[in-house]
Amino acid sequence: MTEPSPGPSARVADARERVAGRLRELRLDAGLTGQDLAARTGWHGSKVSRMQGGVSQPSDDDIRAWCLACDAEDQAADIIAIARTASSMYSEWRRQQRTGLRRLQESRVPLYERTTTMRVYSSSVIPGLLQTHGYAKALLTTIGRFSSTPDDFEAAADAKVARAEILRRTGRRFDFVVEEAALRRVVGDAETMADQLGSLFALASLPAVSLGVIPARAPALWPMETFTVYDEESASVELLTARLTITAPSEVAQYLDVHHQMSESALFGPAAYRTIADAIAALG
Image 1 (cartoon, rainbow, N blue to C red):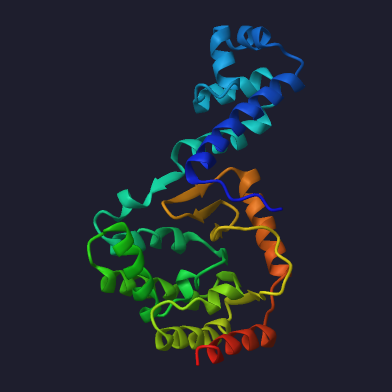
Image 2 (image 1 turned 90 degrees about the vertical axis):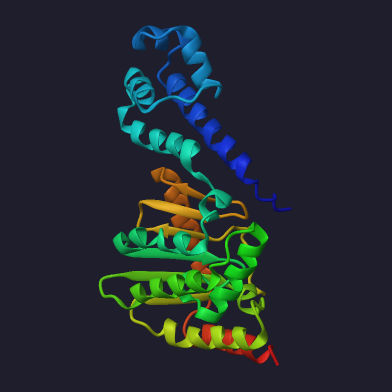
């Protein structure tokens, strides 16, 4: 049986434990006791104990010193990235949305601008860059009302659609993989949904765009949240109450691997278009 996905707070705690675990492993691999490491770093033994026990969060300099003491300086950057993720990856939607959803949409533009290859997986909704104005407005209205944000849904939809112009720029690549369920879930009304699904044919034909659809009958890997990988630098995971930003190279690599596995289960080209057409027909 597949394990349920942990909640946001559990993910943050897990990231912190991974930092502590990596530090413990380095010490053990180096054949050092806690007191040995304390002597090499000039720290009190209790500091070593707190850090490897996950009680206290190490600073960047702490991690560098620990790795140096264990002759593992090459691992410092990865552990630092995980530690920073534990400290800052949890961004509360309510805090971001308190001035409305338009600014939230616009805030992502700089990241999109500097990304050359974007890989997106979505299990339940059409990815943002592929959304029509009607679909985006219906979805943002639902989200905004649930979160009690100011009603700027029309402007937020405008901003979201404006971002999609990046799909037509040269020198970029956008690899989308969506579950068939995302095509079948009606957002707005049937007319809005039909227009959204119809637009996918044109968008999938753009030179920079690849659109794969994982059919409902395909064997599932495991439940996975919607995520986006920006080049090989970071991954963004969408949850109900937060967006997690992941920068540790080893973890970003895992999301790249998952996206590759999801792509292998997906239909592309004419087979994907038939699945989209079937979803349109099912609207009646």
